[in-house]
Length: 118
Image (cartoon, rainbow, N blue to C red; front, side, top):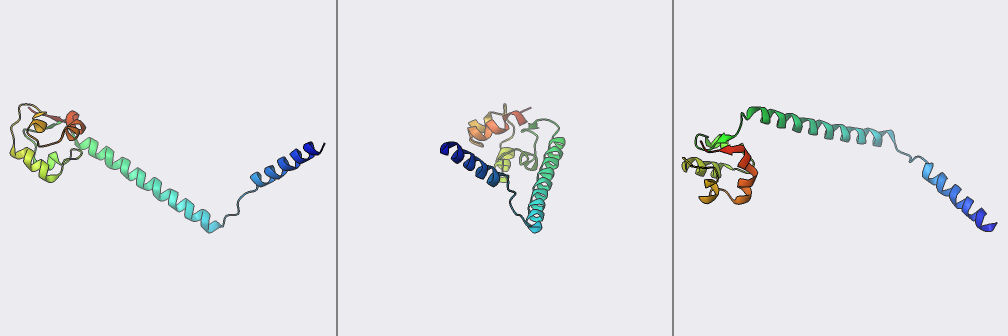
């Protein structure tokens, strides 16, 4: 009997605590809402930028005809690397970038499907 009473009391106490709403001020709610709205806005801008960048690319970049600026649109390719790639044109195949030590193997793996040598 005592066990049952203890169990019921504990259950009732836990239920009351768990169901009690946390007291939050309207200012705290407004701040949380503003933060969430800012995050959504930032994410939406990133999506729009990604779509815009994707639409600008008309297919793989031809490393034999590309300018340094075009090569810099590839992931991980900086201005110095882009200038060295342009200076080394022409290429028989895109993997010559690795063979000539212009990009590392991991950098090449990131851009391999985005470049051609024609």
